[in-house]
Image (cartoon, rainbow, N blue to C red; front, side, top):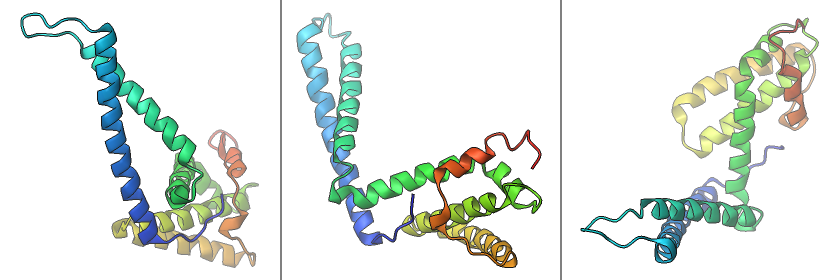
Length: 184
């Protein structure tokens, strides 16, 4: 996935609208589905107590599934562009994070056969994290990310080569799947 510049204010505005709409639609659907299930299968109220909890719970689950289906259909619309991009970016960052210790080991060993791939993945990871933290106003960890990114840039510069975030692809992560048990 290529890193793209996105408009922070547009992203935040659309994210807030999507969250509010999701919550509103979810609540309405949960009420409608819950009440419909109770009307069809519910038990009568006996002495002020009713055992329709399972139908209300089923209504909540159906509402959640319906909202997920709606979001899935809308994700390619222009309004969702920035929010969907950030969602995908977070997924890739998470995939890299799960293998980060193995990737860092490879990037710290110039003799490792995956050394350049490790540097490429780390460069992408830190650039993507930097973008994400700027979008989310996470300035506390931004200094750490910048420090790590500068360290990777120095390693790349010392090799007299160029690596950009465009060089990254998800398949590179497969190189580090068993990195802990393999040598080089």
